[in-house]
Image (tube, rainbow, N blue to C red; front, side, top):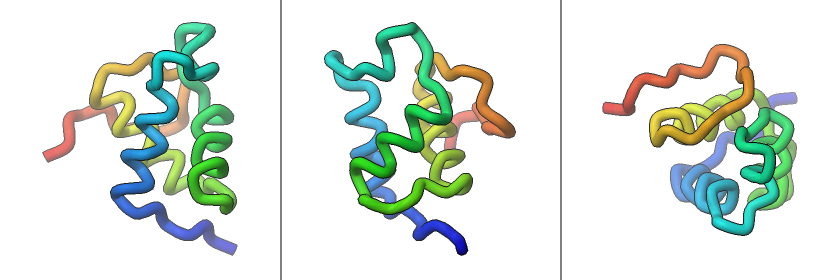
Length: 79
């Protein structure tokens, strides 16, 4: 089964929640894949799926947020 793709608004909401000042994801100085998955599940109530994790991780990386080793994330700015 494939995860339902996040809408652009859902991706933005996940990024907002992960990067909030009181976010536990920032406590150790980097954001992990597991943390991204958990935030996606909180926002959508669905399994995260690798495509959705990748989209959120790419947005975070493009904005300069510190990511733990995340598989195959393109850190180039979005066009």
